[in-house]
Image (cartoon, rainbow over all chains, first blue to last red; front, top):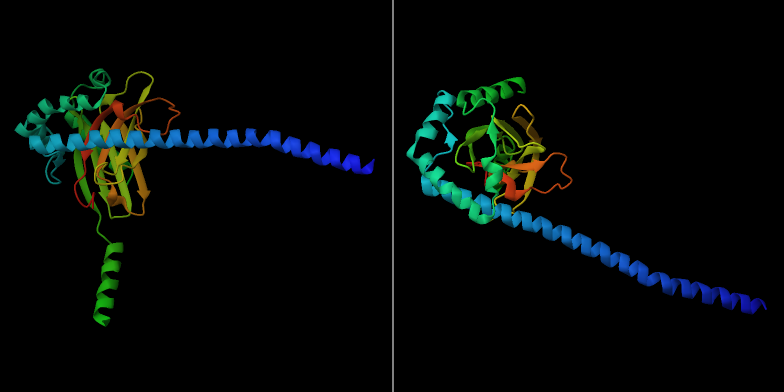
Length: 134
Length: 136
């Protein structure tokens, strides 16, 4: 009788283990799949963003625009000079090429500015920022 | 041999005390306008980025600024510097292992309170390209 009880306990334990194993394996597979999906989403963003960044650089080079402003002189004037330069005008004509890579044009066109195209305002904001936080 | 050791030590010491270099770049809006300005300073480890813009995001959206390690030649890694405040400014300050690995700054428009930490690349609105010492 004692031997039978032992045998039944072992059998029951073995059956529970056998039933639980596929559930555990399935759970691990689901988790592995989720991790793989997250990795592929990340690499997809890296690839797409990398393509856009690379294209932008190509367009800047092609246009000849110098988007780094000189450190000396009045920053607002430097910015105004940039917007009036031939390089910048050419860049403006080339930038729509970015939409070929899937850039959402509507998101850009619907953007609005506070205070219009106030270049000195942007400069002052930047100056205020690095004076306030050294 | 001794001389080589000494010069190598000096190079290492110099590398640890690189002077701070700054650059001010125009953030070019993908629509073809000046989106704003970015002032970036680094000594190789410390990096300080100040951004200003007059643009306002669409309702329910925020602007988020990213440092990018060039996707083609670099790792393609993108680091969020956070969202621009409602006043159109962002201040980012960090000590990195190597700040000069980054090559570009991109501004994206993201849903406010976005659950995804990834960059919404198709909603990129502006970019600037960093000059050396960045991209080294």
